[in-house]
Image (cartoon, rainbow, N blue to C red):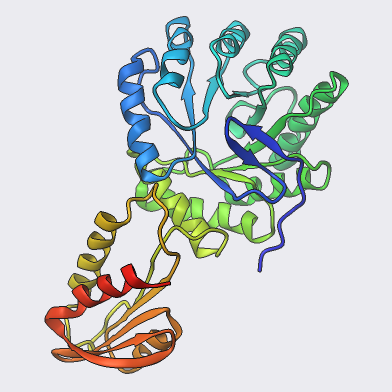
Length: 353
């Protein structure tokens, strides 16, 4: 059981972040924000995949002026990501965004930051202070993690001087150890909620693994209140991986979890095909953004671990040649023929309480 770090609550639109709120899943659009219709279409895909907070890049005035239209067309909180031009942050706030993300490495002028924080404070808009290893402000020491934590603390002190406390912090690097170390350092200095991520993690395969290790390491320590998996891929893939990370740590459940063996020479059935069919069937029945039963479904391919894994799951199948034993809530129920395996499992999942 993970004991989460106690943090101040922050409300981002309808989503609560921190304290005892569920760890939320974020992503970022990869469209031109000025193309507000295309951006809304991508956000709808992300909503369907289970994204709970969306961030958009705001590199120019045309993008900033599109924010109100985007917000009206979506159902999840909208966060504007601002760099270099503080005036764009002020415009984003006037457009009615739910949250703001700024990087002190790209907007470092104190007077400009004060204007942004005061404007956000007046509209009750939370701000994420996003520290990135690739754009650190100020002088550098020999310790990247210390530099990242110090940059966050400097911004924190400014906000506290202004009595502005609706803050979220992130400290991201490609290097897992430096990222984890930076979050650990900052966690000792404050109780603000943290947004977790490994930045520039890479393509789907490598980036998913790197993100799972880094984000998972912090979550296992109770650090983290909202997460984003950064991949060079369709943003829907980011949401899928984020959900798997939270599910694997038992921090959230998103419906049926499939437990299945990797198969070996003892397996007498095409278990890969069977599990793929089951997985596809579940997608059709339980879309990611809909409520569904959080149950464990075991599909095992031989007698070594099969019966016991099936018994430990809520619903299980220990497959053998042409037939298999069906288990439910720890009890062996009946034998079922191979051609009915997926059909019976789906029926039982639907009925499960």
